[in-house]
Image 1: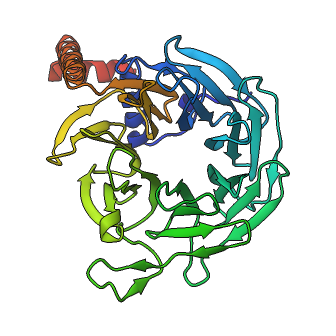
Image 2 (image 1 turned 180 degrees about the horizontal axis):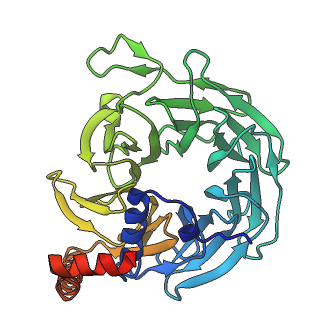
Length: 395
């Protein structure tokens, strides 16, 4: 007889303690959790309902469109049999969902009908990042994989246009991609790529070809470098901040920091936020910087002072992504976090609402600690009673 129950297998004391901790924490309702059936590896906002709906990628191989108001999936997109790692939405009508998977392929569906579309086959290892763009009127899909390659696809025909690789340095697995909205033009896309090494690379892509853009040193304008290196190890997340006039580049890294790389200083670090463990995701507003990662906490920082303002406890396993939820006017209202625990949690970003959430979390934590102390007192045995119990157990 076979079993998948973890309690039927040998476990170290440390792993048992970790599992007990997660089980005890799993019941909390912080962030109004929407519970899914498998691990959530990535999320993006829903363009049709940017304040109340998100697309998520699941380890069970599904992509789902989830209503945060109804706390349930609206649409499920099926096809992959392996974990889905990344998502993008775009294409000719702006309504095609693209998903990269462990099976090395990129799947696509019509967002409204969930009808399967074209499958893009070309990577030799896990697909880790996908992003949509337009070059000279042609819709393209750009993907990055654990095979250390960035591929550019014609979304209409499925034809591979380019394969990007760093010719002079060892580029490791691609972790994330971001299109530069300032330097990109109608005929060329400027792309930033992050890898499992500390280097951030920038590329200029046209229909005819591509080139890797060299970087100038802020304090040595005559010298050049092939990459931006402001982190000590893997960079997991990149995005360009449209809340600032310069549209600076933000990063999240395994070195435990999230950083703002200033465009005006040739993408050298202007601000650094010490989250304290692997940072998987970062999001910003004009007031806050939000970080999340392996330590299970969502941390909210005062952007002007750089000080930690609030820690939001709720997830009971690694957080994999953050999604900014905005209203029709584009004003940031809430942030959504997803994680390995299979939950989607939503947090307010208005100062008074955020303060209320923090108070509720602290009160719940104190109540839980009090109950735990009471249980310990009720179960407390004297030394003689423990010896007598041990003797009975031996008999």
